[in-house]
Image 1 (tube, rainbow, N blue to C red):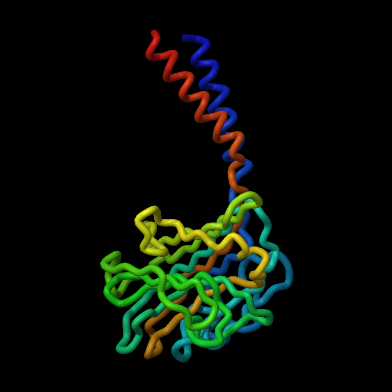
Image 2 (image 1 turned 90 degrees about the vertical axis):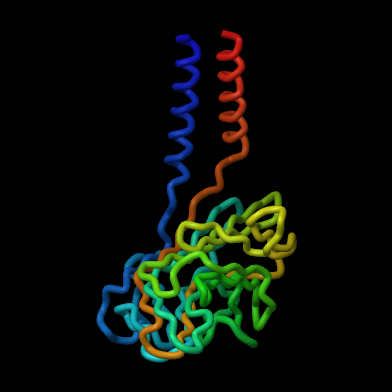
Length: 260
């Protein structure tokens, strides 16, 4: 019994050490607590260097002045075996004609594209948005590409603090993947029966150079979108050897317990 407790302790210690090393690093964060002036050229609350927002019509207090625009921050240091999380939290009030009032996306354009996030000529990639009816839509982009995943009935049409989140997991040995969340619900990005993840083409890292992260808002009238928070963070992907060791150790404990 003492041996089992000792082994469990070692596994827990290893797990806690691994978890502490996997803590997320905030790259960008903004709570939009500024003045009612243009966000363009304003620094986010947290940034890695001297980066500033590129924005068409968002104000530093999170409100919009006109419809159908987007805001972007530069970022191009995407490494292998890292999990990147892009999130925007906002109040949304559906207006007439605003079928998809909010998006998060990556960008391959430099300088970063502004204007509407979805549409011909735009350079947004992996576009996850919320739609009328409390649903979502996903396009891989760039440009005016077809919807590859969609759903409905996830939340109320008018809601405060609704979070939309994209998680990009890079890899040095396999395809990169994307996971999407609306509120606390993980959504199916490609409507595939095999799983919720969207698997990027194997040559994606060589064909596409990601250069930024951002959000879009499409409202037919001012007041359909108020930004509450924007976060972009990174965390190392857990090493397979550590996961295998912990799973094997737990299985060994189970076998010993059954024998006793």
